[in-house]
Length: 105
Image (tube, rainbow, N blue to C red):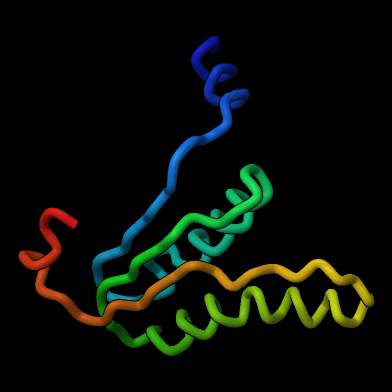
């Protein structure tokens, strides 16, 4: 219980970077990753970096969702005449890579 309270009250430090290696399918949890980005931003004020390695049948839709996430919110803010704009998500789609080349990154 005390450990949970300590973790909840502590502020994260350093740069957070996440990576995904695999087939690009919604079923792999990209929708949850988008939600986590927003939750992380609400808690820390910034997004964590994501490198995505792989290709797949949902690749175009997933890329669009990450790109449109900030655009959609910024359009809503424009309609409300609010000046604060959300920066784009720091995600890089790296394409297909052999796993052996990723060791040590």
